Image (cartoon, rainbow, N blue to C red):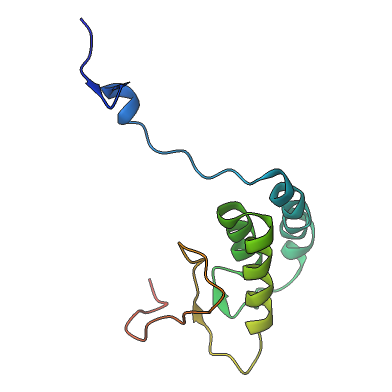
Length: 112
């Protein structure tokens, strides 16, 4: 028997998890030094990141999610915030791109 269809797709297809975003070709090239840093350099350094996720994880996710230009801007903005003048905490990659930084709400905790 035929399975019922939803929006022209089989029900089995609609139950599958959505695919993770794939980086654009330019973003993929920019991800190479980030991946190299995470695999070859970061294991030899002590953990000292002030934010969660780490800056390299943030850069990889922003490049994958927002593309080369916007992802690079977000990663650079994050690196510039890494210093003693900025309070540490949870700083996820924004769902939608914006040139303005929206700080974390004070009611959310970094503890899990």
